[in-house]
Length: 331
Ligand code: R5P
Image 1: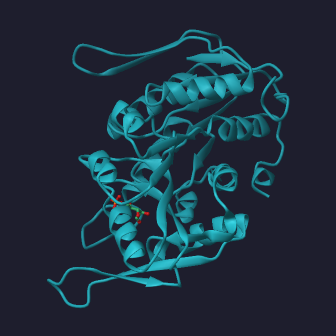
Image 2 (image 1 turned 120 degrees about the vertical axis):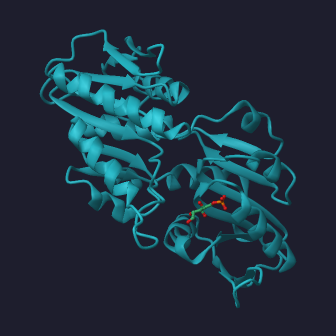
């Protein structure tokens, strides 16, 4: 869907394209988020068509003039990742050939991000390959959210903005919890920087879970670093996929005397049996953003809640369009 942008009624700032009009284009991965961004910016969606031929090839038709426009293509490369990635590439190609002035690929969930290094001999670095093809398709900029590893920005030779869900999460946490009793917890050593950032925002202490397999063939031991007894623990991570990391972390924290355990995770991949695993776990609540469109099962799960991030992405789009600072959104 496409729309032109006029000054916002709800967004934090009126948008002014410096050199021409602005358009928003949405693929099929997350129409609800695209509609939310559209609402936040106060602009009705205009139509584009992204459909399949009988053999499943994707066909895109942009139904408005975009010549000279500053275009934002909104598409998470979530499940089915390859279809959604291909849609993004074909939409970008269509816009480039239609003489858009600048194309920003807005990818709230950047799939393939976990394949960011060679994990063994003759293994690919798929995150780099995906960055290359998005650039070659014609994107001038990329906007994404809580990249699995910040250095993936370096895989692109075009400007990237890696937004953070932390301000939205911190606001929610401040509204719901007595912060004097909250401990932020990183579920693994790799996530410490992200968790520390949130702990700082809400002025809470930090604990870390160190997963170790002492000997091959033995099961993993979860060592909790920090005094969590009596605290409400809030696990912070970028991705929940199978849910295994969170469920095991919640068990370890409760075994160490935590009062209760919540989790705030940016991207709810929740593949396979993850939803029943979470509902059957000791987690009081899992809070995910809608960077990936939640399924019916996720929306109906008793202990899963969705935090909308349309306003955050909308504000970042607004600032990009009017060439204002995006990083100051996170100060
Ligand atoms: C790993 O580095 C990520 O940050 C997440 O912890 C991981 O992807 C979660 O996966 P799962 O939910 O399958 O344990």
